[in-house]
Length: 504
Image 1 (cartoon, one colour):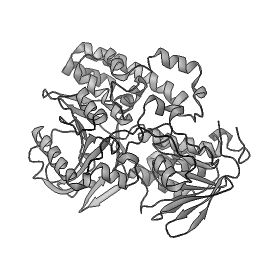
Image 2 (cartoon, rainbow, N blue to C red; image 1 turned 180 degrees about the vertical axis):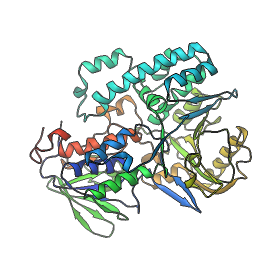
Image 3 (cartoon, rainbow, N blue to C red; image 1 turned 180 degrees about the horizontal axis):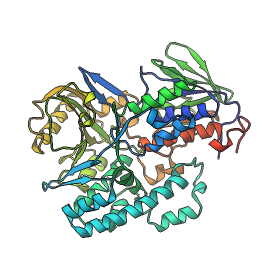
Image 4 (cartoon, rainbow, N blue to C red; image 1 turned 30 degrees about the vertical axis):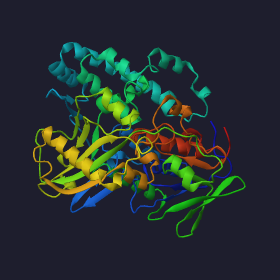
């Protein structure tokens, strides 16, 4: 494994997103002096917070899986997850709504979920579900230990007996045909394959290795932190500060200063110079290369995931039949993915995620009120450079609210007290390449060792973390990326007593 060479005593982490925070905790545990420089007034990055008239909205991810990956950086400094976060398992994890009027509750208890599938789709489908769970669980264990939770420098790092096992399991087939081996009902086929969109691909284009996302979502469990998802970065930052990490909020880094082929400091918009032995960059990787680093070695042209429009709604309306997370499938399926990914069009028959956080935590809304987070996939700005600031955002939000009313959210528009519309133009303004919060897509050539690396190719003391580098997109992967970045600096946890700067 390649390592940062030279001194590593003082590390400056640019950005207090989840990857940067996890990295800072692991580095603090390894005895490094760490300074985190963050342009916002609070930690979180994409997992930020919007407060409007007593309503509290999470601005980024809303689905939390694998809390043990939050526990890992906390445990590195001797902290317990339960001392920093109160997590509630969601039951159901999702409620799926289908065009024929049927619903399916996704339960993480496999016995109860098999019964639910049998009720809705029949006993044969329930048997397929139990076989899928065995497959996906084995797939996750194999991938996590051997391919995800590792720094990969070249494709040769993949070549071992576990790669043969992965091939034997059908991991490099297409996802949708693999899912169809276990499920015959279109309803279950959808609920266990829609997660490919998280990886930036349609299920019929994604590799079967991404069935692990459905496993994390639908089997391992979905949780909600009291106070909202933003409570996760607040907890990580609080623990890091307790263990000596210095935070510089409301400080914008404008450049990484270099000399003699190494990073030597970061510069801020006030002209301040913060010296560093190592610089860890948490901004979106292509944007970090473009805006903060010398222009000599930038990554190749990347293909980006679809983007999304998000509606943050504070409302006086309560809908008793919905769950915390709700997926509303349109009648179209493959055609919807083709519109968004291949054709650069808005969905003609939208599939939507509606999250109702105040159902689980009334404290995120005024008394008697509700918060709603409505997400609609859209093309990214590379695929479709729409003029979102020219009125399209408003018109599309109105269309989405009309769709919701048609799908059972009676009076949704009339109940709106607070509204914020987030479009691909807003994601771009926040520093996300191609106007997408989902980074580069997980095509074969942008996965594993083919994804942009987390160690700069010519600056040996510049490291990257976040969704744009290995292992990829999603809260679990970003938390792992923080550990992988720290390992580049300080070595694996069991080897951190080695001489600083020694290569492996």
